[in-house]
Structures are given as C-alpha cells and as structure tokens.
Image (cartoon, rainbow, N blue to C red; front, side, top):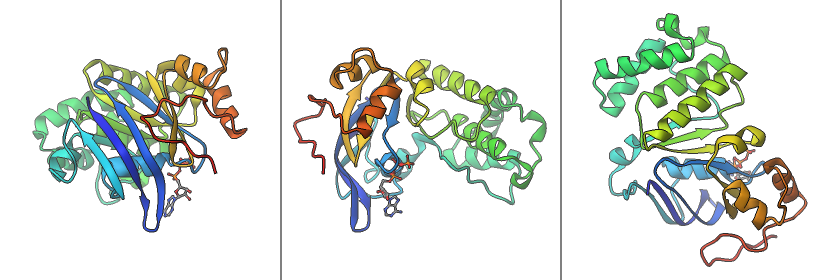
Length: 257
Ligand SMILES: Nc1ncnc2c1ncn2[C@@H]1O[C@H](COP(=O)(O)OP(=O)(O)OP(=O)(O)O)[C@@H](O)[C@H]1O
C-alpha cells in the first residue's frame, strides 16, 4: 500500500469541495484521476501534498500521515504541478542542487540521476540557464527533472501533457512506466483520456467532489453500462448525468444534486 485516502472531506475555508473520498493507490500502480472541470482533482492533489488540511478523514502514505511526520511524509512525494513554478534567481543546475538538499540526497547522486533526465529532456547544455530563458515546456521539464531525481514513493502529476511537445509527452510516459517498474506509484490528473487510457492501470472518477467510480477501463465500462466505450465516451456520458449504477464505493452514498 502506498497512498490510502479514507473518508476524506476537504477543501477550502468554508467550502468543503471533497465529500467523503475513498481510494487507494498500491505499489507500482499508475492511477489516472479524471473528472470534469471543477470536479475536485486539483483539490484532491492539494490535500494529498498537504497544502490543504482535511476537514475530516485520513490520508496515509506508506502508513504515515502528514500529522505524524511532516518532513518524512513530504519526502515521499514528488509533485509536478500543472503550472511550473521555478525560482527566477536560480539556474537549472541550482534547482537540481536545491532539490537534492531539500530531499537529503547527496549532491553527487542527484547530479548523476539528473544527467540521464537532462539528456532525456534535451536540457543537458542548459544547466546555467535561468528560468527567464526557458519556454513554458522547458520550465515544465525542469519541474519533471527535479521531481524524478528524488525517486519518491509517490509521484503526483497534475495535468502533465498541457505544455509539453509530443516527444516530451512520450518521454514523460516512458519515465513514469520505468518508475512504476521500480515500485513507485503515480497519481496523475488529466483530461487527455485517449492517451491515459493506454497506460494508466486504473482510474478514479471524480464528480462534484465525490468518487463516482474507480477501476480499470474494463471495470469502468461495466460500471457505466457501456461495454464497448472508450474512456472518452464514458467521460462524456458523465456530462449527461449517466452515473454508474453500482459505484465501487465503500458503503457511502453518492448524491447527485
Ligand atoms: N482557492 C479556492 N477557494 C475556493 N474554492 C476553490 C478554490 N480553488 C478551487 N475551488 C473550487 O473547488 C472546486 C473544485 O476545483 P478543482 O480546481 O479541484 O477542480 P479540478 O477538477 O481540478 O478542475 P479542472 O479540471 O478545471 O482543473 C470548484 O468548485 C472550484 O470552484
């Protein structure tokens, strides 16, 4: 078990967006977090990385909660946000060094891991560049490199495909699959379902702050009563109010206002 979310109600001050969420990500699983705009994907991610505090419920990572050990919990997570945020005054090399320091990774080891990642994302000759010189996609690649060099238990990737070119998207997918093989787990929110369908092990479908279904594409097809449907078609049917008749939920009711 890597990530276990139990009865999580959470969100913003006076606005509990997430209602009684339950789902798990096991070792070596790549899970797609999907749902319409405003469904609560980013809010879920913010709860998991500790930027938001749950109203109630529990989030455990390798059996550890953030309350038990803030630093230990955070070091288990590599987070790649939707919008890259870099230190304007630091070069790419310094971003790698700061990441290594923050995660307690010996500098030599971090640079060795970074070397391969820099090559993959074609940034090896840009170690002395500042963020101002990078394009949006290049900034995102820096975030990816910094997250992957920490080799965490859990990668959290928010909308990874938006700013990346097709080559970089494939490189990121290959990297995620490689990390999966080593036992790391990945939670990825995305709207690019045709791509996600090909390589995610399972999906968590959020709707209005609730988990309305979880499972493999095949399981979702069964739950949504659409045996031949693509993930895109299942997702679109959500917009028409087609919810699974038998959601894979642990005892709680799904309400649709
Ligand atoms: N800072 C905030 N304060 C209050 N409410 C917020 C805040 N950020 C988001 N929300 C609300 O929380 C709900 C879920 O938003 P969230 O950003 O988690 O959705 P999402 O599934 O990530 O959507 P998208 O696909 O558009 O990124 C929405 O109703 C949104 O208005």
